[in-house]
Image (cartoon, rainbow, N blue to C red):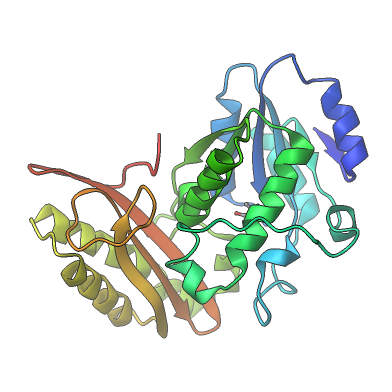
Length: 294
Ligand code: PAF
């Protein structure tokens, strides 16, 4: 695996492979786990692809008081994992390389960035959309893979790609879970043993919402209340949101019909966890845990 730390080095390296096949890109912030592995596998599955991953803990998507400084950084271990997963090129720039001067240009996606995490992390999706636009401009991938675990992020990036006519096709990798259901996340490393024991309660609460859908409940507020109650009962100390929304664009709904996302964010002391499940709610049947977009 070739490792590049600067934009000119990456561009020179990719100039040698571009044209031989598609470039499939997996942007990450490192502290890799098998959820990232699933994204790399999805990229690897593209016929003839040259797989590029990036590791960059992007300061502009963290708010004041958030975990930017303590976000786990493990470049050596991450490089070994990426090489083992079949990644061809790793781009691992410094903050100075990505932001030699404070950014004067920002990418602001309206709509999908506003509810859910957008309400609780002001500026977060602006930072994500801006750095992803920069990474797309640097790597110029044909395909980019994002995890369904960060469903809102994936929808924001889809809007960015559509609105700016970026020539990149997006793929979604399914959420990878620990044996007890906890969605894999770099932030799980923050959990104390007792918190780790409670953490799967977030997924169990969403599953509980899915059971209500399967039993015929369609009222969004009733399902949200049940999911919120289950999160509280699991011992979470604070709930940012537990909501049902249209999976296409995160717009609000009263009745759960069509493709619906149940999404939640909740805290175990100082650690904020997010998770979601997407359902196809038909008149006769409910398909659970479907992909966010094809
Ligand atoms: O999902 C992440 O790891 C980050 O938000 C991303 C997409 C790499 C942008 O910094």
